[in-house]
Length: 223
Ligand SMILES: C[S@@+](CC[C@H](N)C(=O)[O-])C[C@H]1O[C@@H](n2cnc3c(N)ncnc32)[C@H](O)[C@@H]1O
Image 1 (cartoon, rainbow, N blue to C red):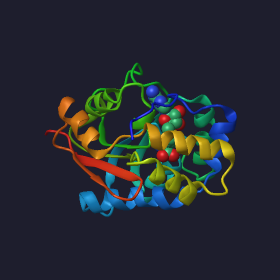
Image 2 (image 1 turned 120 degrees about the vertical axis):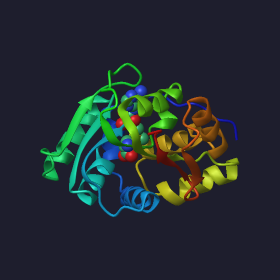
Image 3 (image 1 turned 45 degrees about the vertical axis):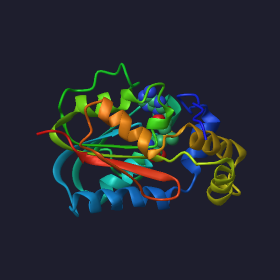
Image 4 (image 1 turned 90 degrees about the vertical axis):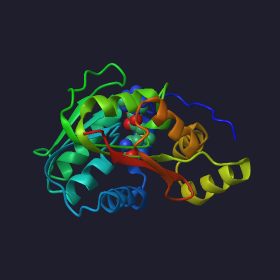
């Protein structure tokens, strides 16, 4: 199927609330688990982590709990998403370790080479140009930084597209079903991500599908 882009921000109050209310425990815990497996490291210690496009901070909070000795900065362009993120971080009692920033990629002046780890979930397919994510990763990560990005995988055909929406968004509010459907169509295939990484000078990151609807790109920046 050809890719069809969707609006960059999903930040109407209704969209942000429906997204924050959804149960993403399975894919978000899997994000944390796959990070551990990929880097063969049960727990990070004393490191600075950047979460690009943190949304309502569900991944951010799960990652922070899994790595209690880290400091995490979450950045997102959506004010409504960030308001929900702030509430989630407060409820989790993690305001001392999770710092949230409103910022748009590109444009937001990320600190150069400040972070030991850069993570991102489900941001790439939203961006007007995918290179904005890879540039942010390169800019913000220290030499040798661990990079772990996960996103949706565009279905191969309309039948698979319909199946995935039914399988994973059945019974959800219409706004969430529509966003999921549009996001699947706006997402990339693994070979497209590999080409983006080559073009951005990040060909050292490995890309692979990890489920019927997700891929990861992971590795370390050049030391
Ligand atoms: C599908 S949500 C993913 C949120 C979170 N990472 C998660 O996995 O739950 C995508 C997020 O990317 C943010 N976003 C989209 N375009 C952006 C941009 N150019 N700069 C910063 N954030 C952006 C949106 O506001 C939204 O919160």
